[in-house]
Every structure is written in structure tokens, then in C-alpha cells.
Image 1 (cartoon, one colour):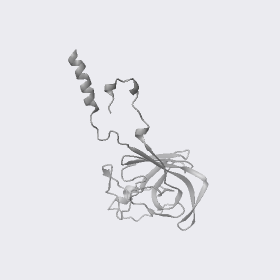
Image 2 (tube, helix red, strand yellow):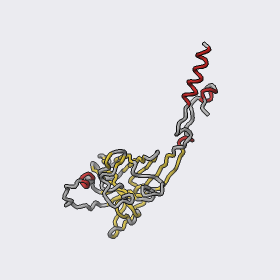
Image 3 (cartoon, helix red, strand yellow):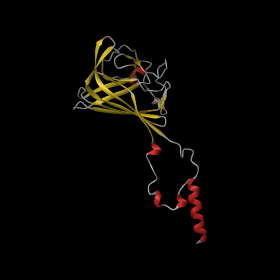
Image 4 (cartoon, one colour):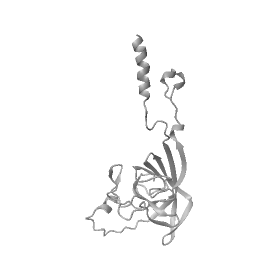
Length: 218
């Protein structure tokens, strides 16, 4: 019996181990764009309808992975709405954001797979239901929040377009590119930082107070 009493504490202590990530804060960074309807007043210049909120785009970063959740309302029922990230501002949107690259991002890897979209800021098509609402989610390691480098999406503009797009077709080297690329902009919002939360500060070991001292790892 004495052997068992000695072995158990030893095994438990070994279980504590040395984890390279132990004690290292893993920040979760959140950004959001409030999306409003926009109207083109002159070529390339837009007016924002502050009374016409049509949804949000929320970005969450954990480690090097960013998740985008888009929720739209008041859209054309039973449709698809293309969404991109642009440079510039809501009033004067610029080109599709491409993280400082001057070449197509089609073969650039995102989470180990080809991005298969022309620009790093090409998000996708949001499916809209019969009630005019729709949602869309995507994960990628090609974006960052508040990093201050070329991958940083803060202060960029997320734009909702009137029609869907075939992003893969843009990457097809055999495509003739003879179709019209113009897609009317109908809504937009600026991506702004919301919070940076240290995840380790939000959690605690459940029931730790009732555990014997030898189970606690210092």
C-alpha cells in the first residue's frame, strides 16, 4: 500500500508537465463593421443612409485564424449577394483589398488550401432567404486584426454587392473574361476594432479550491 501512495503523487506531478503554451495569454481580438445601405451620388462617390442598417460583419481572431460572421437583412429575397473587402472608405471605396499583393491570390494558401479567389479581400456570396435575411461564415489565416501589417483588415471597407459572383471563374486561366465585371455596390461598413480579450483571464479551473494541494500545478 505504501508503494501506491508514493506512485500516485508522482504520476500526478508528471501530468502537470511543462507546456510551452501554459501561462501564455492567447488573445481573442474582435472587430466589427456595421453595414448600411449606400447610394452612388457621382461616379465612385457614395452617400451612406444612416437610417438604413442592413446588418453586421463580425471578425474574431484566435491565434492566426480569423473568422468572419456576416448577417444581412432587408436584401432581395431568394438571392445571393457578393461581398468583398475594399480599400478606401465607405464614401470613396477603392479597389478590392489584396493585402499589398500585386498578383492574383488564386493559388495563395488559406488554411492549407488554395484560396481560389482573385483577391485576398474576396469574401464570398451570402445566400438570402425568402424573408430577405441571410448569413455567411468563413475562416482564413490570410487576414489579421490590429496587426499593423499588410494582412490587417482594420479600417478597410466591407461592401455588399447587388449580384452574386463566380469567384472561382475569375481564377480560371482558360476563361475568356468577356463578361461584365461591374457589380453595383448597395451596402457598406468600415471594419473597426471592438475589443481585445485575454481568454486566459476569462476561465478558471473548475473546483480547484476543493482539490488536494498536490494536484495544483504551480
